[in-house]
Length: 375
Image 1 (cartoon, rainbow, N blue to C red):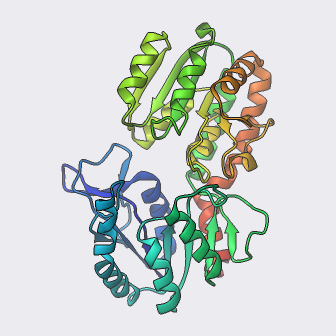
Image 2: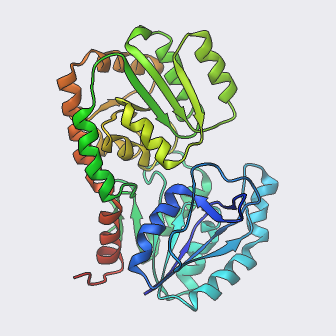
């Protein structure tokens, strides 16, 4: 079977001219590729230096089809989406002549017009992946439109979490992020990890207030820092310099690593006892939570979107109110727990992470979505 995937995944050419793209999506395609004769990935090629988290394709049966970059924060940049509608549809039509099925990854700027176009003008077998918060309050207009269109069209949709009145054609799916080899390694890491003070914490994601970075800094500024060995911030954002300065002023032992490769991020999971994500941003289910749990990081997270459907008092700490005061109290509670209590949570988290393997995801795509007999 030949598959077309349409996404807003950023692609780049590295200094050697090798095509690379946003790591999590490229990893997903690399693990999906052996199950298909050919995969065409239609996405944007950017003339920028790729971040360290970018990865190359590992299989020759994946062919990249470049779209011009469109979209952005400004009105002018958003108008670029409209300008490129004919070109995008033309490319999609050409690729569809070569494939048996498609996946459109939403929500994205091009999804606003591709969902109705594919619904009305294509009889190609396919499904939609909605990667955002399916149950988001006050979602941006584009997100609301795409969700409404996805509910009313007949093809299957994979979403984060399980929700009341979920349509039958909408399937709860976990986003893949772990190999079976990494699952095996996680057993050893958790077995050898020491859950006593001083503790190491990590945050992985976009560095901004919505993701909870300011809350983390404010909370630790009021905590006995002797129980804290280190806080690792992985990612980048416009307030990076401000966050660094605040940590220095409050004597918080923090390192801001910027973007890191997947392997280096995993090294930090291996040495940390806790993963922090006190976010108020629109989340689906962040893969970093599952990755961290696989290596024994006990999550301290907000109850956003489907996060609370996976994280509970047995395997982590959940902020029912996302504020500095509640986070500080939860941090103090977490650091007072015994090695045995935290190790038990870590082991429960490891079990939860089993649903986030590439193998599990691929099997469900083939069986439940494409209805291919995999026996």
